[in-house]
Length: 203
Picture 1 (cartoon, rainbow, N blue to C red):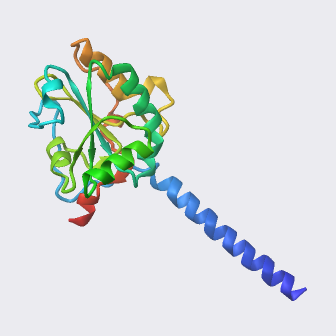
Picture 2: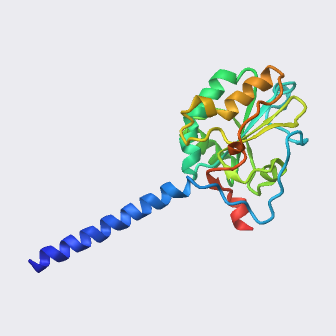
Picture 3: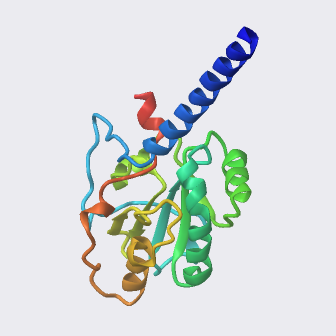
């Protein structure tokens, strides 16, 4: 009888521990990503000097910078929606993934694993992220034809981007292509949700 009680107690403790970890992970991504101590925000209209890959082919088109991390669950949740955006807007918009990988092979592998076939730029030290005022993944920055920030923020308020009414990046892309002013979004686009950048964690 005592052995059964001990076994049940250990089982209950183990189960409680697993559930505790699960809820911690869930709650962690429901809260905004903490801003780094030395964070400097970048406003809409800020000029960005970026030389994307295949620059001869990407002139005179807006660009979506996708800040991505293979280690971030939220980036993986976002991958399906990003593929949908790429299929819909890929001929009118340059898609460039910004990745804090240590080398080109690692970056390419992480994108392919998530079914993302697009150009990418390594940003191991977070310089591009800093120039755009980004401190979390996944985040979207849309640059107009003159490489000025047109949109900066979340893709959606839901991790799987299932709510069409709050697909902020999609709505911004449509307006940018139509050369219309950026739609008025709620302040939810400015509160970054996801994972902190490794370059910020190292500082």
